[in-house]
Length: 217
Ligand code: SAH
Image 1 (cartoon, rainbow, N blue to C red):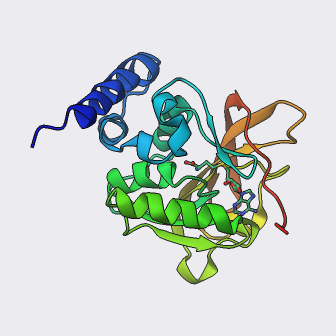
Image 2 (image 1 turned 180 degrees about the horizontal axis):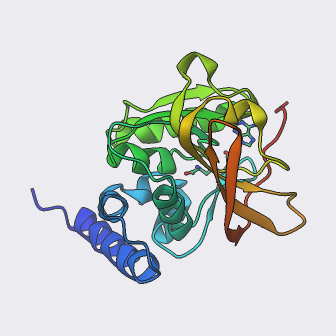
């Protein structure tokens, strides 16, 4: 059946990918195609659906946000991953970033500290057909040791320093993309590569993310 609404969203998404993402230099076809497919409007609260494809982060409740589409694309590309890779995400939020990685062919394990958001993400992932994504409610500072090692780790909340425990859950030559730094100051998005001897790191972009918290009461 022809669904005019779905068609409209698909067009908005194609435009988002062209103007906000491809034209700003994201080259990975896997990222561009995944973002053309994942229905971002089904990952935002229902009152914000009309803003789902706009060039900004959006509130998802509990003082948290779904990241700006460009940032999702940038981080997904920077992870340097191949289909089939096993990825850990810290900060599930709406589940959108996890869905993009799943659409790219990754095996995704994701952790969220706020129970209400873990539930929100599970629902969103289920209704959009990404129920293969594994969502756990828990403290991301601990990582997911039972599932380690990972080919790559992505953090969508900012710790003050690189969490050592998470580095230990990366494979050698694995990549971790994360924002670091306190919320009040300028945070940096960095790329960490685990080496035989320790880590290598590179600064990618100045960014603003919500803080990674140590506990949720
Ligand atoms: N990736 C998300 C954006 C999430 S915003 C998306 O695509 O929608 C960051 C998320 O990190 C918030 O939901 C917040 O609750 C979560 N978070 C903060 N500290 C955390 C921690 N220690 N462990 C796990 N999740 C955490």
